[in-house]
Length: 241
Image 1 (cartoon, rainbow, N blue to C red):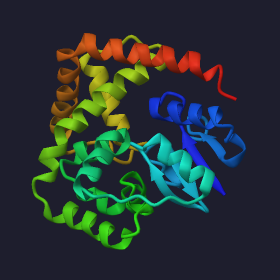
Image 2 (cartoon, rainbow, N blue to C red; image 1 turned 45 degrees about the horizontal axis):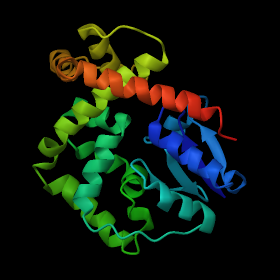
Image 3 (cartoon, rainbow, N blue to C red; image 1 turned 180 degrees about the vertical axis):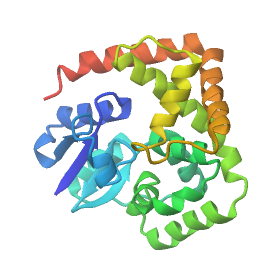
């Protein structure tokens, strides 16, 4: 059984759903909309979308290659050679709003040690013939590469800025104040009360302001891109069966 977890507001999810529909492959998968099954984000650690799961195991997700995803769905198997493990890791981190918010809030990549499913699937390593060797390399990088956080921090800030504005558009909320960015960031990095800052509130506030400043410096560009994306998804979803 192959499941595809997706979100209607995710452009990559939309592209994958469209490709599945265009290739008459809908009957080959179980499609799970994370906008209505959001409890799975916690219970199954769905930390990136789209995400392909086979027989209960997360095997391919996040910044996926659409053609490779289609091949995996149609054949049930796929072999990927991840040549640059660190590059794949950086891309996976900077593509996930959930992981970006957690790591940026924490100020370190060390929390990744708790997210095996994410590391395995979002990097593509789960489909690599050298999976065991390369997942060990991933953990080595996470724990020994002191420059990794600095390399990915700017990408996480950008990812979070885009996601904050994207979610505002879909919720039809026109509030891009400093305070809204700070509170959105706090909410994104926490679950309920767990994770809400207490002793480090000023640090988190400054981080939220950095996301806001990134947006303000590129406001027109970001708004135009996301509004065009919104219209494409909205119109395209009507033709997906």
